Each structure stands twice: as C-alpha cells, then as structure tokens.
Image 1 (cartoon, helix red, strand yellow):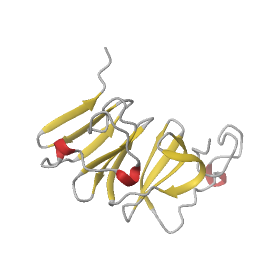
Image 2 (tube, one colour):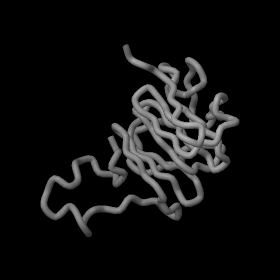
Image 3 (cartoon, one colour):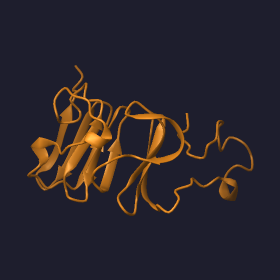
Length: 156
C-alpha cells in the first residue's frame, strides 16, 4: 500500500540484513523532515519549510502513493496529527485546520467532508491559543492555556 515510502511492495525488516545501513532512506528531495507520523496505511512528514508530504493509502488523498507527495495546503504547518480518515494541523499562524472525513464531526465544522486544499480554520478555535493538536479515530483534541478541548464522536 506504500506506507513505507521506499517504493517497496514487500515487508522491510523481517529478514536479516535489512536494517541498519541497509535500510533504504525515504527520498524527501530538498525538503528535510522535522517530524513524521504513521497512521494505518499511510505516513506523512512536515518539512522544515512547513510543507506536508504524505505517502501510502488514505481516504483523503488519491493513492496509493509509493513515494512522498506534497499535500496541497494553503498554509505552512507547525504540527500535524492524523487519524484513519482525517487530519488536523496547527499552522505556523496558530490556527487549527482539519480535513478529510467529517462524518463523525471530527473536523469541528459539523457534518461535512473537506479536501486538504479546502481546509479552513476550526471556527470555535479562532480566538484560542493552541499549543498542540492530536486526533484519534473519529475525534480531535487541542491543548493550550485554556486547557484540553476535544470534539467529534463519543461512542455510546
């Protein structure tokens, strides 16, 4: 499915001689990675310049992609967190934007889906200082001076 980012169609690390210096580096081109995340069937990294690059298979981008591809966002990313069907990013401007499936209200925008290029700030957080953002399967959370705040599905 491509989530290893090395163009490999088989497991890496289950045979002798595949780790250490033999482990293939993921081609990030000129975009050095400052943070990385792995979720279900895809992986992403944030570049020094605030770009988001992903590979693998996800419901919110066309895939599978064996190599990292830039996600079309209209803002530079400071922090990113993704779940199976959605992502939320804290922009360098301090605003939180979410995209992907909103079927469980996890985007903070009601019952709506968004593509990354249409990601808009979460309205309820526009005047709040946010330090970090974390998402799970069907919910999203932020933390800051006003405390921990979460939204989305609350299973019964």
